Image (cartoon, rainbow, N blue to C red; front, side, top):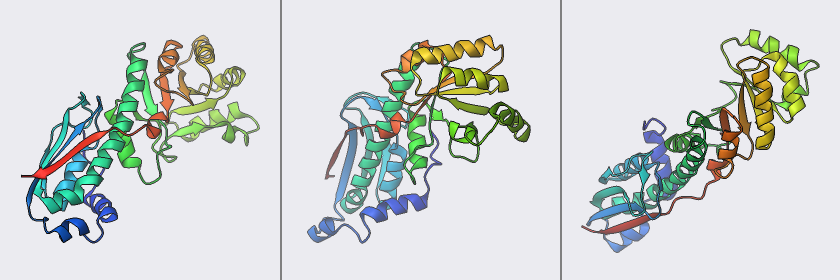
Length: 280
C-alpha cells in the first residue's frame, strides 16, 4: 500500500506528543545507548495496517528495522509484524507510539475486512465504502486502514461529491426539479440521493439519480427500493447505509444492494499487538 498518507512532519508530531523532551526513564537509567531489538506480533488473527508508518517512527527516533507484514496483509495469530534494532533509547522513544498506531489501524482494517468478506460471500461485485465520519484530524490514517481492509471511502469530504440529504430537500419546493437542475450544474458528478422510505424513493426516482442511498432501511425495504429502481428502467443503483455491520452485510447484499455504506469500522476495537524489547 502507498505510504503517502503520512509525512515526516506528522511522524515528528506523533513523537513530540509522547516524547517532547526525551525519555526521562531511559536516560536516567543510563541505558539509552545500549544495543537493543524490538518485535511486534499479532496476538489474534487480523488484517494489518500501519506497519510502514510504525517503521518510519522507529527510524525517525534513531533505530532501524523491517516490516514483516505489510498493510493489507491477513496475519494469523502470533504473526510477526515488525522487527527493529538500534539504541535502546531510540526503540523506547518510538515503542508505544508505533505499537498503538498499529493496534488502532489494524482494528479498523480487521473490522472492515469482516464486512467486506460477509458481503462478497453473497455478492462478489458489491462495493463496500465508508462515510466521512472519521475522527477529525485522523482522516489519513483511518482511510488507509479501511483501504487495507478492502473498502474505499464513500466521501472524503463535502467538496468532491454530490449527496443530497433530506436536510437539503427540506429547502426545495420541488426536489425532482431541483435534482434535474443539479445534473445540469454539475454534469460530471454522480448524483446520490438519500431516502428514508419506499414512497420517498419512488418519488425521487423520477429525477433519475445515479444512486439512491437507503438510510437505516431494513434489508427487505432496500430490496423493495431495488425493485423500484429496476422497474424504472434506468441505471439507478442502490446503496444501503446506516447501521451496516458485519452482522447484516450479507442480508443487504442478498437484498440486491449495489453498495454498502458504513461507519462501523471507525469505531472498531483495536487489535492486540504483542511487544517485546530486549538487549541485543
